[in-house]
Image (cartoon, rainbow, N blue to C red; front, side):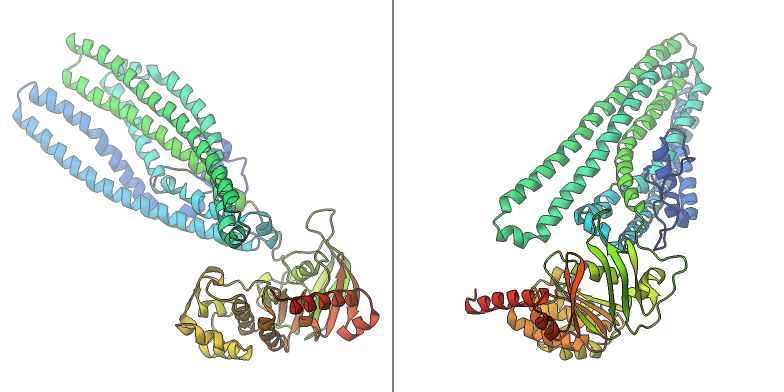
Length: 619
């Protein structure tokens, strides 16, 4: 493996299995590392464990690489003192042959060690990336609504990429250079202990400079990871909202925001560059001073006959090998700090446990009839600020219930609670008599279908999108679903039918077509519970008629919750529940509520006037 270190990983996620970065272990420590760094390194171990035999093989090859590197100065000393100086051609010839053989061995062993280390590192990164993505998928909806998508993308891309050098060759470099350093120290003392002690004259300066560099670079690399996440966040937000940016002519402010984020990233990077530009040449300088000291005193010993010239040549060769590991490890520390900063960010994600998880006594939800009961439910996104206030509501199996109200009344929040994207602070929600907090999330979501305001389609084929909720659906099932909701002509207009490629977010299809595909996807999944959240708000009046037909097909025989501002789509609901500031103020059929001349009648009257204006004065 290679020589780079990263944050801690181990344990099990609540709500999902697999290896992951866990919380701190105060008892863990590693010599030469701070406690947090040691923990992060230790928690990489679960990702290395599946490859332990490969790692042992790489370690064996690493020892051989270090050994071949240490043998060449000794061969030079033999060739000079026992060959050239005394005129022994046989010793000189054998020394040259040994040089060639050891060089070839070093090349072959080095190739095997580099390949095996890279193989291990790439697989560890793959496992880490998959585990991190799995953890993201288990985190509750609230996390994804709080954290910008760009930051999550940064964790999965640039932060994991920052670990690449660490896990592909960093650890190996630590071992090779560590063994080389220890071996060189022993050999130097064996050759000449006085010169060996002189070699350490520059150590106090080296240790002091390294300590200062370590503190400053740690802060600098942490800032670098923060700023690159900000760059990706600004980039993702502006690309995702490019239609809004262009529609309002805000390209220049968007460009300026991206320029500022990049300027912050550049400045953070330049700080690390300045630190490295000062530190690493300083190591080179100390290396040159140390060599100059040995040249002066060693040459005097050669001239006085105390040591042979071959010993002096070998000593200088080993001295280069003495400072090379220090330089290599110092440069590695530069990468190490970048990796540690990235691992800190990754660890912060793994340390965020899902707020929603399966209870210890959670059961698998049996096939549902779909009776829903909300019993004195109160909920707020932030402590002390309630969005839903003490709501009690019973929805019968197979009933279609529409939730209406002004913006901010709590309609979508109530639907999210029923789908268990959040848990209420007070009260309980049950389905068929089962408290949703005591059934497994997978079994609940498997019987739940959601059609959002914007029918989100993924990049891929139309078939992949339509079978998203039921991957084993046959083509005949797909075609039947499209025909049932009146969307067969959409399929006929595509060049390759179900194999037609759909762009990200459904590019190439109209808003109405995307929404029809979302209805077809829900129909194919055949959920027992269905939530339609503003499913017609983004389409025109003509498309709405098609979608209303699709809704009739989709709602039949299942418990359904409709959220709509276009009140025409909910007139035929079995019951309409009117919300105002998180409370139920009215409920009943359309005709009943109109007869009451209350809040619903006012909303419906406002909607009719707005619709009449749109029809009379079309855009």
